[in-house]
Image 1 (cartoon, helix red, strand yellow):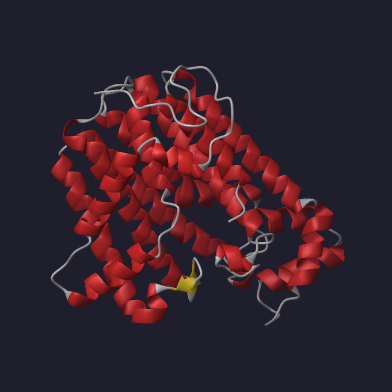
Image 2: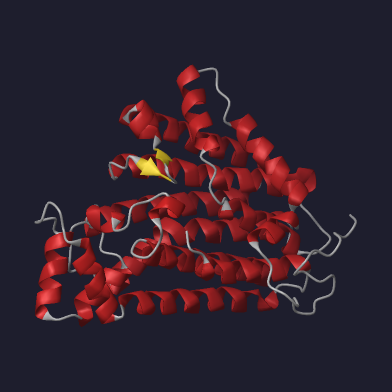
Amino acid sequence: MSSPSPLHGFPSSPEPASAPASLADIRALVADDWAAVDTLIRSRLTSSVALVGQVAEHIVAGGGKRLRPLVVLLAARAAVPGKLPPEARHREAAAFIEFIHTATLLHDDVVDHSAMRRGRDTANALFGNEASVLVGDFVYSRAFQMMAAIGVQRVMEIMADATNVIAEGEVLQLMNAQDPDTTEERYLEVIHRKTAKLFEAGGEVAAVLCGAPPAVQVALAAYGRHLGTAFQLIDDVLDYRSDPSVRGKNLGEDLAEGKPTLPLIHALRSGSDADRALIRAAILQEDAEPDLDRIIAVIDRSGGIDYTRDRALAESQAAVTALDVVPPSPWREALARLAELGVERDR
């Protein structure tokens, strides 16, 4: 296989990049794979049942960053530079990882009674809860059809474990809802299960499919776990900091759903008695319309945003460190840069 030509921000040698690379630069490094996965996603979501196709088309049209399949594609090329899985199995893996994520979003929006995602109507708002849940099941089962077709036992084991952990994370989050006594440890456990686990599985599956040494498989799994944690922690920050017109979500949406995220947990731990009473009432949803401006001011006074950013930065740095045992290559540098971009984003 021929080596890719160097892109801006990615040298052909293992020397550090001389200039920061954007997400577009990173995607360009796997451009052929990226286009093939997009085609694969669309083709595998086809169904003879009309409603399935309608909901699936709405999901695909919604776009999104598709960071999870991007991690799979980069990890597959970084695990053993110059060697890819037979029959482009890394592309199938990238697609079924995205399908698992999509299924969880469909179910999440029903559980959370969400009407908007990424600035668009959710599937449940357009087609109803019943259709969203059932099409979520369809997408989920289609992912396992694709895994079975690959026929690698270790891949099935990783994904079976991951999906089970994700399901447990959903239940744990439900248990934490409207609970102002949720601890940081409990919350981080939810993050690991709900978000980080799928990133972790993607990195590990890519390495397994390439026949990478066990140490590299472990490293890419750890990379995904830390990246996913950092990504979710920044989401927590953006829930109180982002521009709704850019992000497609209203400020304080997690609070409106009674979810105690890390900025709130830190404020509860560090604020005054009056501050804690205000936040507790909002989480318990005792006030139909909590004063979001006052709550954000409390979070700011407590240092909740900075604390959460620092935790995210530590996870991002841990993700980069995990790559130390991965052979030097432009794709390894891209994975490292992706971890940095994850904590720099504004949506």
